[in-house]
Image 1 (tube, rainbow, N blue to C red):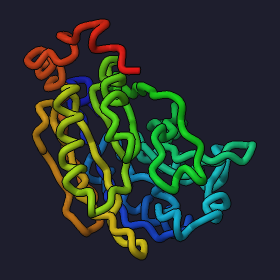
Image 2: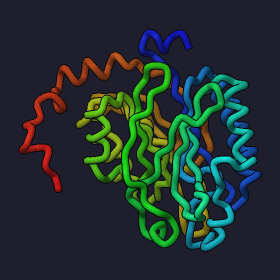
Image 3: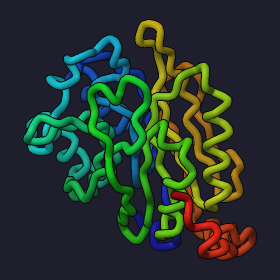
Image 4: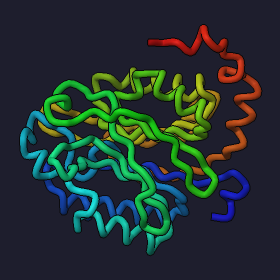
Length: 273
């Protein structure tokens, strides 16, 4: 914790193999991996997209509504308690249900006190997600212990405007919880590096691993620095808890060097509608 004051922090990327549709089993696995992340000294841990349910909506179908949980559900209490007891910040992606029954592909931000400090709802829904989920309507900057970061989810990564907006609002890290398919592995490599470079921030891409029938999620979770260089990466095909330290002073140095944000031509580069 003290290193955060020096602009250094340890991030944990939890490369998880989910059991499709099994909330309790997935929670058990998540808490086990989070315990490992804490033992490795992580200040903040991020899980992959839809970590509590699994992803394949072709198989889950309408069951995803019953598997979605509300903010006040007892199911989430173990995560809140873990964050408070272990003093670790969490990014928990899950299928979230509103009181009116609408569901969102969401990431909750939970602080070391076990409190929800915010949420991000996936804005760009991919393929069959549109048949079940409501789209998020805004991007957010979160701040924990003086560190500003943004979150986008999987397919959002292909839309550079999202990452740029958060960079302009002060994000130093972009977390990207994902369920990325093997057939698009080259796009994962390209997009993670490019979003980090063009915005000169750290990017933490946290991918699922494992098969859900014909859907294979390859892992390859990674940390990319503000120069677009890969600084830490997880394996392909295996569960893994990747913990690495990042130095946020690199963000300011990279932005001073490239000036991709400060050299923008206002009026010309802003109007993308």
